[in-house]
Amino acid sequence: LSRAYGSSQRQKRIKVLINPFGGQGSALKLYNTHIAPILAAARCELDVEKTQYRGHGVEIAQKLDIDKYDVVACCSGDGIPHEVWNGLGKRQDAAKALEKIALAQLPCGSGNAMSLNLNGTDSPSLAALAVVKGHRTPEDLVSVTQGDRRMLSFLSQSVGIVAETDLATEHLRWMGSARFTWGFLVRFLRKTSYPADIAVKVEYATKEEIRNAYRAAAANPPRTPKKQPLQAADAGLPDLKYGTVNDPLPDSWTLVPHDQLGNFYAGKMAYMSPDANFFPAALPSDGCLDLIRVRADIDRRANIACMLAVADNKLFDLPQVDYQKVSAYRIIPKNQKDGYISIDGERVPFEPFQAEVHKGLGTVLSR
Ligand code: ADP
Ligand code: MG
Image (cartoon, rainbow, N blue to C red; front, top):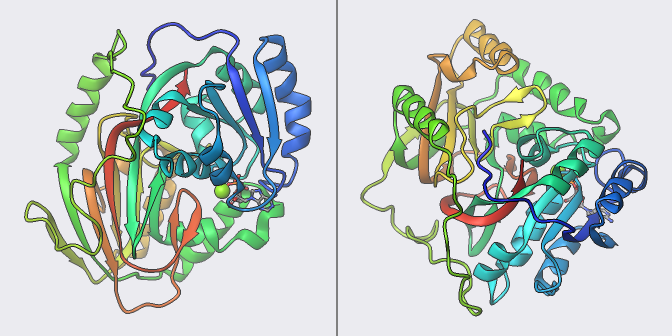
């Protein structure tokens, strides 16, 4: 669902980050062959840098001269945009930096969800064209607190089967995006349960409410840019409305024990891979995360139905799938060690965490 407005900026000044390690290791070649010629033809001003190690994208964004650039374009999977947003978020002028610098992904990794959703494609050349023509658009970002850390997430948080699929298949990088399908099938057949306590701040509780809210948003896309004064130079990240994972649960949250949790998946964007529209009701700046929960003790037929429904875009309608829109939640995994938690496709410790959405905190380029 396109939410872009205003006219597209010409001759954008772009900091290009290339992750030579992402996907099957061909980001540099993809950039030179399919991306650079299009950006050059559009007379974008380019400053190209390769990421040298994990976390380098965080450092580059932390030190970036934000007056010199309009866009950071990541030739990578979803990992480098994740790092760049976290780097911008660590700055003293975080609020201003997150508004000033628009992020874009030029799909060169194995997980290219950001490009699928915002550029409408995972073809590097078409994505480059979308960046040339793209409009600045606000995008919700999510604070995740875990232990005494706070990080930003733009795409997804998963515990259980989807997280394992993302993370336990690193050794299968050579497979490209097929590693996710393979990883999912293998784990799916084992039918693991991931018990947890989950507390949610619910915004839309039923599928009917979600459908209505989505239709209303689709019928009324914003036509004129909201005039926001540029954030004060020294404002960091916004305060956490609900505190951190270490604070008592807020009264307005609903606590639901899940002794049989098969899948916990929260998403901010619709497509997680080209044929998996997991979150069909996701909107870029509605202040909500879409949350999917599936019990582990549903029968095999219901489970297989879930899997087939993802590809057919019918997951939302299945009765065995809980789908809510929430603005915050906490999840506390139980009785397990060494499980998998994935934040935007990056592994974090297997410990309780809390998430809270910041409406329109980030900026992206979108069609
Ligand atoms: P993919 O979609 O294939 O996972 P990503 O762009 O998400 O690709 O990147 C995967 C990981 O590579 C990220 O965790 C990132 O920090 C890391 N990374 C970035 N640059 C390098 C490098 N030069 N060497 C090794 N890892 C890197
Ligand atoms: Mg990744």
